Length: 107
Image 1 (cartoon, helix red, strand yellow):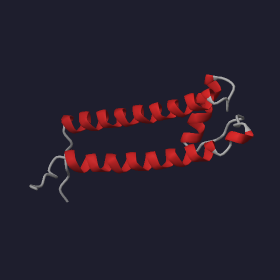
Image 2 (tube, helix red, strand yellow):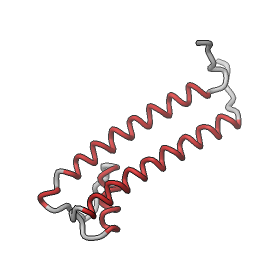
Image 3 (tube, helix red, strand yellow):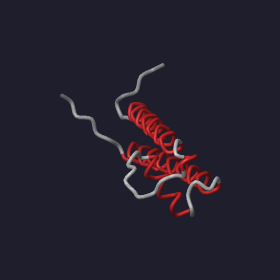
Image 4 (cartoon, helix red, strand yellow):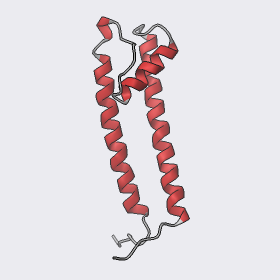
């Protein structure tokens, strides 16, 4: 079996792709946190950010709870995060196939 060697360009492209995806996840989490704070579901921005990261990653292990009338937003954010992580994973695998040395095909 022939071993494929990765080039520095491959590492740069994959590193940049991973960084951009991570920033996008952070931005989405921040948008949810701002929404929680603005609608009054959580008392302060720090609590909103902590709750949002917990919900987005489906970690959910904190002592923060949304007010009863907003409680359904937590699972919605968790589902949204789950879908976003799945899409990001699929995109990373697609990028690996596209920029992998020796994996070029003529279309």
